[in-house]
Length: 289
Ligand SMILES: NC(=O)c1ccc[n+]([C@@H]2O[C@H](COP(=O)([O-])OP(=O)(O)OC[C@H]3O[C@@H](n4cnc5c(N)ncnc54)[C@H](OP(=O)(O)O)[C@@H]3O)[C@@H](O)[C@H]2O)c1
Image: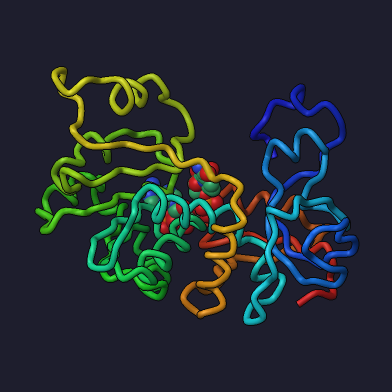
């Protein structure tokens, strides 16, 4: 809601992308009617077809859904896909994390960060994560070995002062920060061959961000570290990989709050606070678990 200017939406478009539900028409795919699934509707499909998650029936590409693991309810699985895939693809495809490596998750209580902590732990990495003090137990409960309260002092200053040894192999920025400081100072805490991954800066300050992160060459003081923007992409293989970790109990659902369909605007209000820990879910069918 509000991500795209309305003139780009050529017709009535049902909002939202993440879904959990039951197949009612498998349309000749490998699924069958009655299969309980979760998945997502990529944003360009949402725009071009008008199909969205916040509706009783929707049309989803077979490649973007998988069978829902039996150990999670539809409500718990509903918010898995975009945040889960973003974390999965960032850490495995771009971060190429391995057992014994060290990873920092900035925004350990965001939905993306909550999944990222669990995926990194499942792969045997040492995980440090940030959030505000009230979320320390939540972040540690997901598996973070080290916690940093980003509200105490600017996080980059805390990390520089900590003299991190060994330096992080992967730094994953999941809060959507526009301030480039974490990257600009990263040589102090990110290994020379490490990578700084970002879900994408949100908010104002684009020019400073672009100059400091994307454009500034190292001879003009630019940072000698790799920076990569994550853009979640459609991949049934990755969705299956994520679901397998759920099935094995290595990823647990992170549901911040659940709203009735009639209260969907309240769900947006909750998201808008930027204080949710995990996913905000709307139940279209009130009888579902
Ligand atoms: N590129 C992609 O493919 C992709 C995919 C999915 C999401 N995203 C982006 O990822 C970002 C996170 O989305 P989300 O839905 O996971 O977030 P979210 O759940 O809305 O984030 C809320 C959380 O952010 C934490 N937070 C707020 N400011 C912070 C800061 N400065 N440092 C650390 N933590 C902070 C809050 O923790 P405290 O209360 O403790 O501060 C709160 O728990 C968004 O910008 C979203 O657009 C990108």
